[in-house]
Amino acid sequence: MAAKNSQATIGLAVKSTLLDLNKDDELLVFLDGCDDGTHLILNRIRDPRLKVHGSQVSIGRSAARNFLSLKAQGSHFAVLDSDDVSLPWRFLMTRRLLRKYDAVFGAAFLFGDLPYRLPMALTYPLRLSADLAPAVLSYRNPFVHSTSAFKRDLVTPGKLYEEIVPEEYLLWIQMALAGFRLYRTPFPLVGYRLHAGQISRSKDFYQKGEECALLNEARDRLVGILQESHGDKIHSLGSQNNFLRELAQSRSLGVRLEETLLTRLRAFAKRLLFWRDSS
Image 1 (cartoon, rainbow, N blue to C red):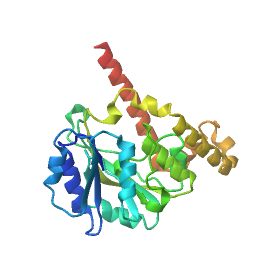
Image 2: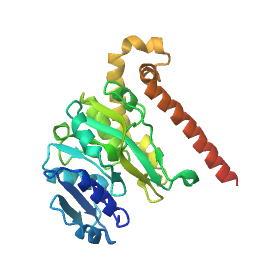
Image 3: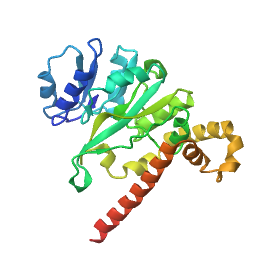
Image 4: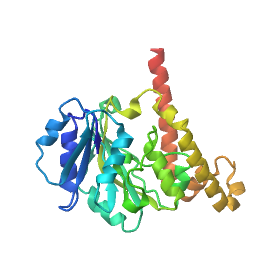
């Protein structure tokens, strides 16, 4: 857990995680140049499983997480942002799934600054199989970072993340390129808080992600590998540029439903922005 000026949310994030962990597990937190009361909140939590590290000067979220991966002792890593909440069954489900898969993810309850003053919402409660995950990753990121857990030997501690906007998306693609099995359960594993201070709400966040050279290079390599393995299906599915999307939709009702919902949500968001700009 990397934290930067998280005094308003980190108490719940840490306590919910500790409640869900086993006695031999540990929760590592990095205070990334915090100049508020985040450390005071953590000082009140008396639990030997909580290990706090930090820097007076901000080193960035990617470097903070990489540092923590070097300090971690377990055979598995899991991630939670300091403004999210771990649900009580998260690690019970995660441990079972990691017996079969290399990395697991889940759905998430959305809360906080939701549109129309909704008290809560849910990300798509749809399963994504390990066989189809690489195809979906080739054109979008289907995984919520705060739900992730993966085997330590999949990565090189200290070098999990690049200091780029789509840091986790690149990590998942690198796992797929290495042939690891990534799976998303339809069950919610965390509460994902929406608020104005999120990095994903910063200006040009998504544009910077799409223009990231490192990400696009890795994605192109993944597309090339998948094209080779599914070459016989390219012409039967239609456009060569969109065949992986069409392949995923043709093989999974869940992916097809999710793509339909995403398309409609994007169209709705564009209309909403147009209405705001014209008013």
